[in-house]
Image (cartoon, rainbow, N blue to C red; front, side, top):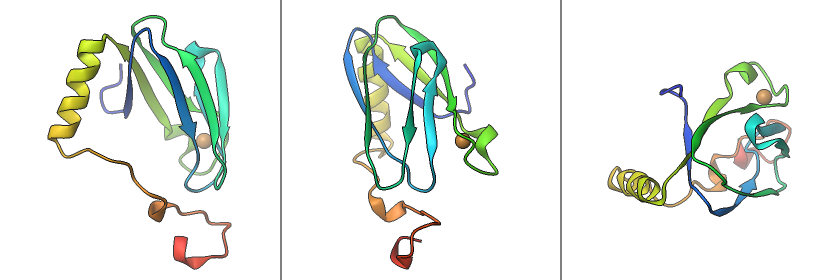
Length: 117
Ligand SMILES: [Cu+2]
């Protein structure tokens, strides 16, 4: 597991639905071990549903040539026990990582509305 990459933690043996959208250009959310990828569009929401069947750390990457830093769009998905998941979420909460980041951080370069740039 590459320690410096962002990591999505998921509890094992759980049904998961990911809400997939982009803040800027088209990307594609791809975890090769999951045998599925899904495009990410600005101003549109896609969903990916699956059940986490076994624990492990799985490499993910962007599968759409999206721009200058495309090759650096790497992440991990860590499927862990419920106890480890709860501990990780508690740690994030204790560090102030709560809530969600709103659309005010969108930066779609193709959008004419300058309030989002
Ligand atoms: Cu990309």
